[in-house]
Image (cartoon, rainbow, N blue to C red; front, side):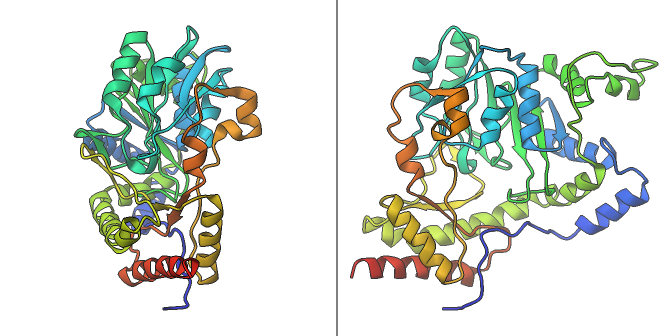
Length: 383
């Protein structure tokens, strides 16, 4: 077994990033909405078959734009899982909303769609399904519930690029959707994100919000002879230098995706016997979902076993990680939210989950080393 370090993540590099960034510099256009930004947006619209895609400076900012587009006000309620990143909740709390947390499904770690209706109150304005690990939530029943109660569906598809639910791109199924292009994601630009808009009625206001509350986009298209401050907004545009980096990756998204899926399958096959023996649980992919191998995780028996396994891997120069601490158990989560219903799975399943190294270009021998080390851990614990 090798002694060299196996990191948890390495940001992908596909080949044209530096050349495109040099072109951006040569264009003397490195601020927002330059030619590379436009090409990224066009790629996203074609790939997801969505009405409008707007590149943003982060997925967090895309979510904040959603809260503004949804006209979230003080006292409104927004339903989401507690097992998610803080940005999912923060975007709506900033507008004065109360977060209503619902329990997750233990198989996919996504919000349990059967519990959403019971979490609805007269103050509920939106449901925010989070597609954990690039595996789609059950969007059909979620949309049916939203239609029944007149709610918006805002997809947190931060981990969902190149993944699908029943043939539809994650992020393109609800009213609004958000991607992340953080360096830990399948395609990245260091920091960045995108807002996907399904209905024409949101497009013009989204452009205004993104441009600091001005109608500058209409001005640049020649639709007005000047632009001015017309609405709430902020600076949600990434620089074109960052977009140039991202475009090189989007153009190779299929190659990145297939490489990660190959690594995923090698992990899955290598660790299958441990699942058969009842030592661990492997991820579950519903047959109607096409995932993107954003991560590969295993579930241990309990929190203590997880802690021991992560330490065991670290001693052998392998970096593994747990993931979210449920938001409802955090100080801010208690202040700004409430868990409606029973926390049957959220805390229990979150305490079992271990993320193994996964990135574009991960070597087969490194995967085999990780797999063998996990087996070694369980051989030793069985002694």
